[in-house]
Structure formats: structure tokens, C-alpha cells
Image (tube, rainbow, N blue to C red; front, side, top):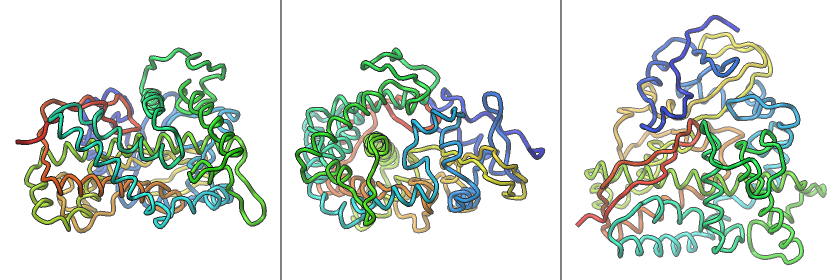
Length: 414
């Protein structure tokens, strides 16, 4: 390892209870080269600038997702295989998996769900307006994405609360402590073999496997049927473990990350009423406002890669087999890329944010769906002239991975 400046601590989950520690990230962005961050018994290279994040994202041959997966911590070989999902693969495995499932997530195929997204959004929004106030996360930001992804997957809506509960436990698994015992939900698997080290993953696996088996026997017009029937021209299909890990990923990413974006977006619009007034005066700004919500919220704070060979980044030599962590939370506030990055600007024209990864092979499959959900919410709020006031401070998730909001009290502005 080359000699490097040591980074200020950015991994302590409790730091994020007060929001993203932007001053620490700014210090690292302003330090020449790539800074080294101690972690557990080793450490990682902290990539905090926009240009460097883009470089790492696009060079999957040198910066691997598969070698050590995308967690900050290291995993044993058997855990790597047991927990491997789409985001923890490189080509050719990644290309193969993506080819099998990508058709379900094309803009054309997602667009056919727009009426469903709108019906759910209108139902949730009007109920909140009728109450006049409440926890925006519980009343709006959580119900919309979970009901949408469950409808798309073919999961009964009556199970939404259970799957939200499981997702919350997964986020808890990114913090320092968990409230669940290891055998919760009937789990008998070692936690180190489960995503997020959580028995909630066991419950999600079981649920996904049961639903998949139902759809093999009784196909429906839904995503689970598409996944269990997915077949390439050469007859290739998803294995059992590939299906269950993908179902797990879809429930978590399709629920948690969009919920985070909607929560932060609502807070930003309430805290910057002049910006929401611009949207109300000109609904054409909804598309750019959506991109600004995504930049501002940065639902996933970081992703790890592992070097497959000795390389150099921003003038810093990095050895083979070393951890390199892209901090999207920092790249999305990089002064060299964004004009006035700490200003929430619904009309921002240059906005190449990293809210769906850094681009390249690992661009998030659900990017179009997440955008659609935010756009529809803003459209329906604008139609109703609905403005929000924040009446309490947000309760944030103690996580260095998900920029989560557990609750925030808001009211309909009079």
C-alpha cells in the first residue's frame, strides 16, 4: 500500500444520525490523491470526487464487484458465494444475469406500470391530505414504493407491512447493533452467510422461494413469473440461489432506496418552499426537480470495489487486492462538478449525479422505475397545489450505507 493521507472517520453509523457528515467529505475531496481510511483490521481507499467515482465505476476489469463483493467488510469464501447477487458479479456472470432479466426493466416495460404507480400514489396522497398531517415516511414515502414493487412482482398487498418490516431490519443490519435474535423468523443459517448479516434475509428468501414456486405452477402477468420463466436463447435460466438473491435485491432496492428518495425529496421541498413554488408555477420543471431530488438524497451512500491488479487513481498508487470505496454521498456534492452543490435547485441543468451507481455496467436496473415514482408523486402534488410543512426533525437510520429516514412529521400547508 502506498503512503497516503489518512481520512477522517466516515464509517461510524452514528455519524449519520445527524445527516451526511459533509464537512468530512469536503476535507477528503480537497486532499490531493485518494485518502486511506482505516477500517476494522485493515482499511480502504475512499473515493470521494466525482471524476474518480466515474473512473472506478466504468473500469470493472480493474475495480471488481465480485472479488470481495460490495460491502465495506470482508467475507469468507463460502459467504461470498452464498450472498452473491447481481450487484456482486463481474462479466461474464454479470452480463449473463443481466441479459436474463433486463428486459423486464426496460423503459418500455416499466412504462406500462405507470397507471398502477399513479393509482397507488393518488390513493396514498389523498389519504395523507385528508388527515392533514402525520409521519410522511409511514404515510406516503414507504407505502408508495413497496406497494408498487409488490404489485409488479405479484406479491399480495396484504403482505406489504411484513416486507417493509423485513426491509427495515435489513437497514438495521448495516448499523452497529441488531434487535433481532439470530434465530428470528425460524432462521438456522449462520448470519455471516446472509445478506446484511440479518435473519430477515432468511425470511425474505423463504417468502421469495414460496412465491416463485407458486408462479412456476400458476404463471401470472407479473415480474416473479418473468424471473422464474426467464430463459436465454441457449436455454440458460436463473438458478435457485440466483433467483432468491435477485428477489431479495428487488424487494430491498425497490422499496428502501425509493422510500429514502421520496422522504428526502419531501423534506427538501418543505425546507425550500421557493423551489417548490417554481415547480408549481412551471410543471415543466418536474423532470429536473426529480433529478435534483435524487442528487440531494443519494439513497445509497457508498459501494465498494476490489482491485484485481496494481493501478493508479488520482495520482495514488493502489495495490492489487485492495478495497476501493466510492462515496456517492460525496461525489454528489463535488464542487468541481456541480455549481453550488449545497443548493437545492429544481432547475439544475447540469446534474450527472450518482444516485443509481456511477454508470457503466452496474447502472441500477430500477433507475427508470424510481424516476417514474418520484415524477408521478411530484405531478400529483402539483395538480393539487399541495405544499408541505415540516413539523419535526427527521429520525434518521444509524447507517453508513443507506441514507435512510425512519420518520419525519409533516403537515399539509394551509
